[in-house]
Image (cartoon, rainbow, N blue to C red; front, side, top):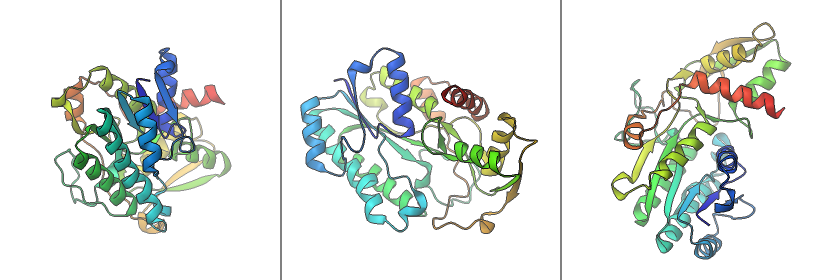
Length: 292
């Protein structure tokens, strides 16, 4: 097997499977769900990796329940930190490249409203961000060959995500309120999957290893995102989308007020062209209608 993909039933794992199957290369990959490969079990990880000897490990597995993580820090750490460490140790053992997915939540409230570069010092605000940062640090400390891709506001036609939640609410309510004081970059998981495959096609020489940012081009608030979803889905006459503040919609975990990521380094290093978030949203909604 050329490639091991963990977290295969998540949004990104399923988009990777879609693109790889479409290219007729599914026989080169093992897509492992959390039931098939529990990355919190170091012996299971090492046994699988030693048996497969993959050229690349793509880690899509993550504990992503941001609010629930505040009540379950051990569970979040087991997946986001220690699970990543187990994969890194196994990758080091068999000389595999580990491509690991991280998050904008490793950044907290920087006070800046400029897109965040890879040189910005992480400062997570909650358990989810802290455990994802700890996973990054464990990978770097392992000495394995690695690429860490931080992404943000991921959505897809698969799984549960903001776009699908908004569509469900818009079909069922005449009015919804969405926070307008948290800014970030929506990212279509299929675009991220395509970028991962292009990065891997480059062969990833040692001078291109490291940490990068990937998101769709442009930034918006959750309110702007929801209003655009409503418009593109043709639901503007059915449901009103109104702004509210984060104070009016309290959550267990504090969200970064501004977490738009700067993708310049990734685009230049791997000659990537990244779509703007509005075009990608249209594409996802079209894909979703085909799956319905």
